[in-house]
Length: 326
Image (cartoon, rainbow, N blue to C red; front, side, top):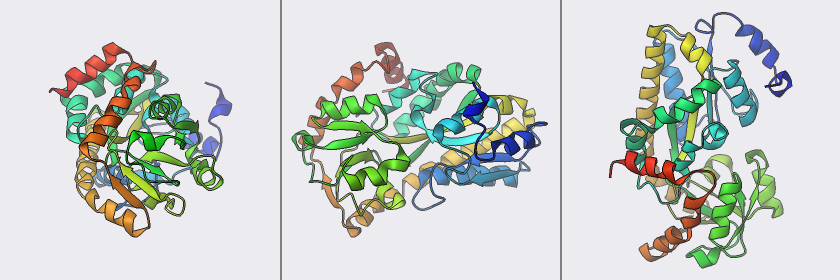
């Protein structure tokens, strides 16, 4: 990978600081959300992880979202061994291993417990890492950032698939555009940094995210309707440098693994507090639609094209199905 891809935002100094003794250097954790222990599940994970490391003799520091670069830059830094830990989007490792896209299948997992079963008891996290670690990136954990994703928009209530017609939704990638189109809407890829402007100018009418997101990022001035569609688990990932991880002593690596377990526990406990978010949305002026079973079944049926996407094969979907253990 070219040096110019990652030498930005003070990274030359960071590279010099990391030059010798990765295990002895301070562990940098790049955040992907505001440092809000009440509103951000991703931050709950990162903070619990950093706290455990610091309490067990491994110095760790949190870096604000954007301080070390954007998602792609952070991925490059991790793969090059210049950054130890990054809180990142699920699809950031999709260029290496598409198996991870099973976690984005609509209406595939019933809850986070089922996701955890597939990842840990079912062995899917280990399978993902079989392809990512040779490229310098280890997926250390999956982090829930809130309740299952719902549909936000600025135009009108969405009570059924038919109400998606005419909406233009912000998309993460082409696969999400395909899902919106299957629902009768349009999609446009917009970086997260550009979302507020896109919503204000009408480039996008809304997005699919867990309920807390507009509250955390100040989007309730633009988004006035939320449909609690529970499309898929709301997940981010923690990626770490494989060079750094393998360069640790056995004792240090065990501490990092234990820190990840502690962070998972804190993150899942936090998820249990999120029922109150719907009330906070309503208090902020967002009208909330709770789909009845018939409407939910309609969305589920309309989502079937996602299961024939080029992003994930039928064999890989079958692996996820088996790993769920149902």
